[in-house]
Length: 385
View (cartoon, rainbow, N blue to C red):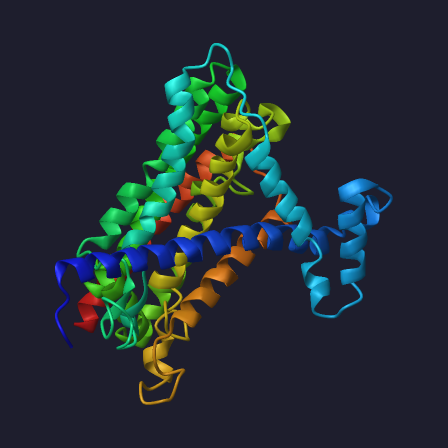
């Protein structure tokens, strides 16, 4: 395989970045759409084709068109797409209002900070070990060269992920402070306390795979967790996954831990004063962070690009078995989709905690459980070597 030149290396890296960005910005709007559909089924809500079918103009045309879609078996599942497109256009075209007494620079930079920190995390995520695909020989400039399954193969990938992801809390806190309003400030302070608290058990739960695999590299860790552990390694993996999942809900401000955005007492929390695409950036950052949490759960606990979770792949399916015995990016993507569905499922079934309960869960229960699980992972590693 030929060694790429500097120009070819830059082009391949840009292609990898483009693929990840496309994946993220396809998954996020589909997650928003799926959330509406799943919550509609869970809570028996009526869609726009039922409650607004008498409208005239563009809205009436869209609703009547979606009603006709429902008569076609496959298209019936996609009836809400025009409404989603309309909401996106509304965010783009809506007037951008800035409060008169806000700190305009910080008010402007806060949503970008949350958005960028959410996207950049994917630089260290490995979707599949080794080569993802190879350019055809006839392709100009990079023909015959491989594209790896991740943007950057970082030796300390987990540290990069945790470090960059933690920057997102600054965007939320700065947004609350820069708005110069009481409710956003309370939401920002709540978020700071909650996210800092839950980062502790989340990081400890992710240290269990580090101890089990003796690696901080995302790809190596995912591979060893899937095919390199003994049977008794199941216990710390399952416990670590449950702790991580709980912390993931809190870190992304999702029910039952959505205290920074609690509408009952905070109107909308830290982004109350935001409108237009500034609000849209916060909205996108939340769903991208959900995708990040889902990707880490899939990579560290659910087997990553292998079929079976919790290390069962190496125990039950030999590598010689066609297709299911080998890693594939499709397995990784399906697990991410399943985790995103779990987010929506929990939102539709579990009510919000009180704020004191949210903090008690972190400090009284999750941190001791995460430390005990880390000790258990160390014992497994000790006897497995």
